Amino acid sequence: MSEPRSPTELWAAEYQAGGVPSSVRIAPSGAVVWAVGALQRRNFPLRIAVDVGCGRGRNSLFLAAMGLRVTALDFTANAIAALTQEAKKRRLDDKIRAVVHDVVEPWPIGGQDVDLVIDTFCFKHITQREWRQGYKQHLLDVLSVRGHYLISFASVGDGYYGRYTQPTDVASGAAMVVDPVNGIPSVLFSREAIVKFFAPELVLLDELKNNKPVVIHGATYERETYALLFRRSPRHFVS
Image (cartoon, rainbow, N blue to C red; front, top):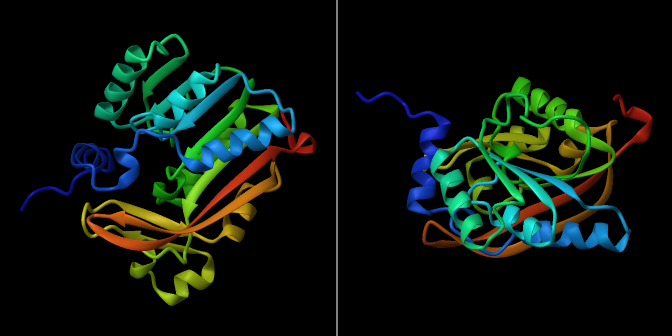
């Protein structure tokens, strides 16, 4: 019997196979484009960003092309290699620092001067609560007093992942699921559970809900995803 593969190995295989759409897409996430536009309309400064669980870096490349300095973090070496290659190709390598790093460990970023942290479908794959608590602290350790945080995730009502949940888990606002195709585990959250988890240090500024069909593993499913844009609460800022 073969040993179970680690999350890093599972994701390395997924990036190689490209079964999940976000693992091969080139265009930036709609959630990131929306969030950047929302912040620009409010005249918030955007100079330094962190892309958490960046994958092949489609969002890092988008932010760098807008002039931001980006630290891109992912524990999958082949994804980081692909980002580094593409950044050089686009002549954006001076704007992007791509690092092989597990985001449940302290982030390799000094100071609290980050204007924007983005997480598109990374947090949902942190399956242990203590790891999620550590993630939150690492986020607060780098986010500036006027900083913002974007998280996008599949909800407990998602048409693809939601098929594998139990009613009691859905009622609690968090449900553990495992993708039967690639074996990757994740947690589905309700909107309310995410807002509560990041309070009181982060306050919800804006939100976007998406319900649209998406092809995953060769079949079409009605997705239910959220993008939540938070701002740092100055009342709870500790330098």
